[in-house]
Amino acid sequence: MIIKSIFKVIESIHVKVDLYKINLTMWEYESIESKGRFEFIVSSNTKILKYFKTIVSERGEKYLHLAEERLNSGDFICFGFLDKEEHDIAYLRWLKKKTFYSEVYKKTIFLGDKDAFTMDSYTPVKYRGLKLHKDTNSNMLNYIKKKFDLENIYIIIFNGRKYDHLHRTIKQLGYVKENTNSYFDFSYAKSKISRLLKT
Image 1 (tube, rainbow, N blue to C red):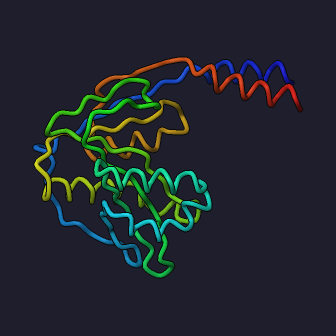
Image 2: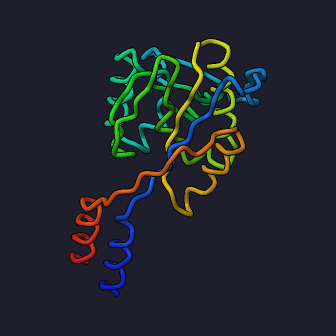
């Protein structure tokens, strides 16, 4: 049983990540909409952190500090939906406009003056299944089209069956796959196998 599990872990260390792009000059602007008790929000201010209650409970205090760093850097904007009844973030994602090295993609993402990169989306468990992911992305693109002089928005998504719904969503929005990067994540395998051997 352990041997079989180890082989599964070894298979999983081959990571594939797809890079997508959408050209906003081809994006047809629509109105930005909220959804009932969910209000669409855009913020580059740390005041938004007071609504991170459920996100912090699920992702930990470390994520709160990361969000604070991002907002204080001036390089990030967060988009999402706020549950007005519970004063809680129901969905969140980030936009970055400067070149950076992606730990997920394992490459530098080069961004020009008219490029931006959207990343690190998260839906707290109790809000999943409400289509907030697609609606936030649509609202975000509408907002960018109206407010910023940007042409290309990039996004990366892991390859694999459990991520199929994310690939479908962004393709529906108009994102086109640019390329795929693959690598071996040996650190993941080492920690997984170590835990299996202890059982």
